[in-house]
Image 1: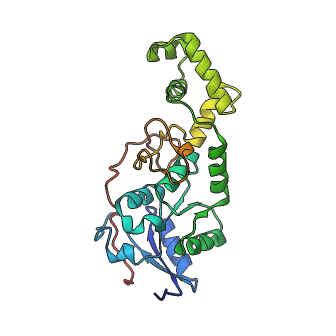
Image 2 (image 1 turned 90 degrees about the vertical axis):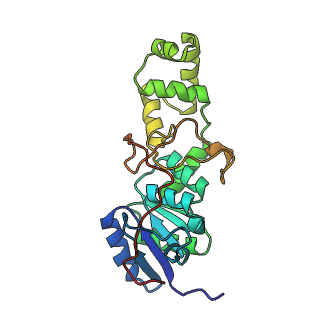
Length: 256
């Protein structure tokens, strides 16, 4: 089978300014051909020519996760371009099948190299993304009970209040808090909460679909406890979207 010398990139990013910038930048390169899809229009389906003919699909976090879950044809060709640098979000995307994860602000060379790598079946991770994955891998996972207590700590509850909420002894709460600080390498409760927010280990900001048990492609260490609802705006809780909702673009450029 003869491959096109140009990498065909379908842009399905939710930010119109980023989309326009990507399209212009890629079209200026001899070995890339960009096709833009507008959010809010209709997609012909997961097997439509817009998706199946693309070598790589570039999307924001939420759009990329929905594409991965709903369109098997492009499952292993999605590159996520986002400012969401939470460790849990990154690892969840890779577990689900994303082949690239770059942060906004990356160099053009990183972007070009990443697109080329994904086209030939490789994985593209930005430098900071790779360090986040490494940091996540070396951390010890919290138990379900520790995750429950950490959530209570994030609400500002004292050990006594947590004990009442979870119907356990205060001494038990103290033991779990000590374990949480140790696992997160935190010097205080406040420090532990800050680390948890940065890493997204409880998944409060996630809006995409949660990975099912046994589906990890990395390691069981990446599995999370608790609900998952991250959004592009890390650290802000938002109403979850329908994980089955497909991206709804219309190609405004020529077809492949």
